Image (cartoon, rainbow, N blue to C red):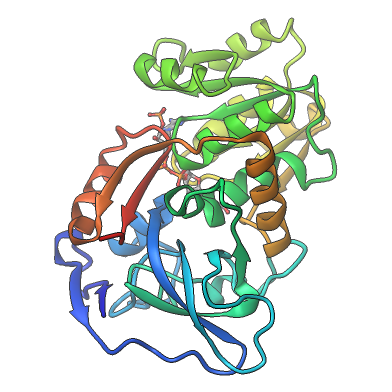
Length: 339
Ligand SMILES: NC(=O)c1ccc[n+]([C@@H]2O[C@H](COP(=O)([O-])OP(=O)(O)OC[C@H]3O[C@@H](n4cnc5c(N)ncnc54)[C@H](OP(=O)(O)O)[C@@H]3O)[C@@H](O)[C@H]2O)c1
């Protein structure tokens, strides 16, 4: 079988295909024929050596953490999945319920451990979730990191978003567009920021009620307040990072909540601003298998069509990385292993 490996050079163009025997599943494991994998911003910074990992832990590792495929063989004592099941893998191996634990980072796929950009991958059966027919392999591959992060931020904190409330979502990347779709499906009003009017038009078509261009409105938090009658939103999905957090805090209503997710924009915040707003600011570190199960069920029930910007063939993985790097996408970038 073929699989990609991350290079020592930390150059995306040096990510190479290598050949290796198809692995055998051991006790408790399942062998999956992969059909799709998606890229996250994390994968980009892993490849170029900017992700928070011990030195060179990405070298020689199969990239990407999120994929979907068909179970082709199971090891002894596996009852959770069977041959022929369509499955998606979880982002944090071994985390069945609850929030990320202190050892989660060391267990992740796509570095420091082998990921899913391969024709066949062996998983612990407990790290797989069975897919309903309505969810495609390419759509499912978008869920383990981006989808679960959006779901966790919106629905798994101490103040879950309620129907009729409002949410603010920053940007139009993978996490953001899924957050728009999930908040909309949950009956909330969604406001999105983006640096591009064209991208805003696209997210208005999948559930956002208003868009603000943060380039033409640098004080975009004022626009959010205006759009919410001066109150601010109930929940903010904060994919920007330290450079946007201060404005996100100002855009959120007194006593509302902020899911801290992103590391995109450098900057600083005075923590007193958070206290003055009486906010619940919560770190969101993807999430558990049970969140992925709830998310898959919600996507099936609401017939949500996951927004995929572009699907690249397996042979063009480097082009997929370059596409994500350009940040011209809306939603997810996916690689298909379907021949
Ligand atoms: N904590 C977690 O568990 C977790 C999980 C997943 C992702 N993340 C983080 O969340 C962030 C987004 O990840 P992703 O995979 O969705 O990335 P992505 O698909 O690459 O999307 C990034 C998007 O961010 C937007 N952006 C760039 N500069 C911005 C700014 N100044 N203000 C607002 N938006 C800006 C851009 O959208 P526009 O062009 O529309 O502005 C861009 O398309 C990354 O920092 C990633 O590391 C964290």
